[in-house]
Image (cartoon, rainbow, N blue to C red; front, side, top):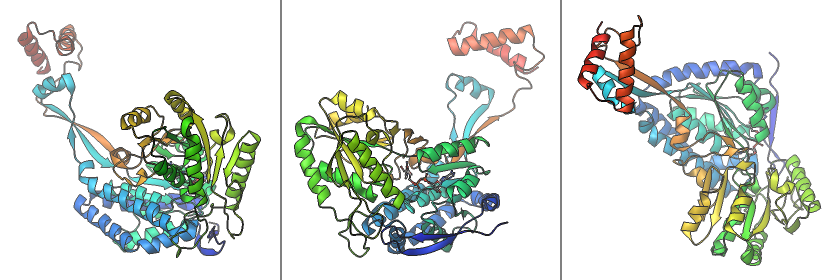
Length: 521
Ligand code: NAD
């Protein structure tokens, strides 16, 4: 076994070293899965009340140490302290609270309604049930942009559903994940139940995707999602993919423009635009374009960018790396070549030590531009116009991504109508990008934004199997479809089919008695 590489973690805002973490070796991953599996077999048979009690202890420990954890998140990502608290800690706690409160419901056994076969099956003494059971060990491969909210909420959902987890956090933000595991164990989570594999995606991440985990939940770039799906397919491991976004924001002419401009500003530049559900495409009704744009430009110009966790007025942090800044420079210059006009920003921020890029608004003449098509994981948003509702919907839906979207209007009926024609996993009327923290609501997309759901009952369903249990009281010694096959059985079968599915009830008693006689032979 080789020596374990050391990962040095730097604050992208100050470039100062925050700490270091020791990598896991890819060949160690199967052993971690095995340890998690052993811990899970004990966890799964503990009474629900005991499991939820432990998870509640974890939650209160996180609430007690919210500031400490938020500080670490800010150090690893450079994001404003307010964002670490509101979007990492708060979302983490909120989703886990849903999960813990919903466990009883998740594990409720249900009887299957057998439809037209219900009555005959009852007479024959048979019933079908769905018995929920944990899947086993879930592999969570998580990104850097919400280094607590994503692994914590996903892990707590998995644990609540009786599983163990193997978390592979981003190698950019390993410290938050390690601190989170420590906090879980300190507050009573069984040792080994939460495993963390630190290291590069191409090595340790691939080892997790190729391992014997029982499901993979991957959150990250679309291209990486494709690679993970290929690896997981070798063992037919089921996967959930939470990938990139290119969210549309439609402003109708009757929208409350002040509120809408504030929302567009926050939704575009939260986490410096490095949010899967950040707004990337703003479609404005032509009649209000100038007024709305002026309001939005004013909002964006008033944002203070920088890094100081003791200064609550800083509202935009850095990008995660120099590479990310370079990517923004390339995207802006390509957009300008293709006809975009910079309304605000458009370049790296001067006078700050870290990887800063200015919040940028681009006016876009046409939809057929790279800036509208490709994922822009940073603080750039494109503004376009429309004349009719149909045009707005067509433009918004003309994207390979489909994660979130929003419609802004005073007419809630119109808002609902438009929202439900948009191609996206979550669509909001008059709000934006914040439902990740509403634990009871599903999270996920389609197309290049991935598939499957985390959070809510739909997310919970992906963490259990519902075993079909069929119980027969064994009243009869045979079945009409068991050998020896005979003409009499064939006719009874035909009779039975006609009776049940076509309601042919003539000589009903005679035929039922005949079936019963054949089954008693
Ligand atoms: P990323 O895809 O680079 O990395 C995500 C995780 O995958 C990391 O842990 C990384 O180490 C690992 N990884 C990378 N290559 C791998 C490989 N070949 N095999 C296995 N694992 C590998 O993403 P990122 O830069 O950390 O995060 C940004 C991306 O995540 C954006 O595209 C963003 O839209 C997306 N995201 C989506 C959601 C969502 O809920 N849909 C939420 C947050 C972020």
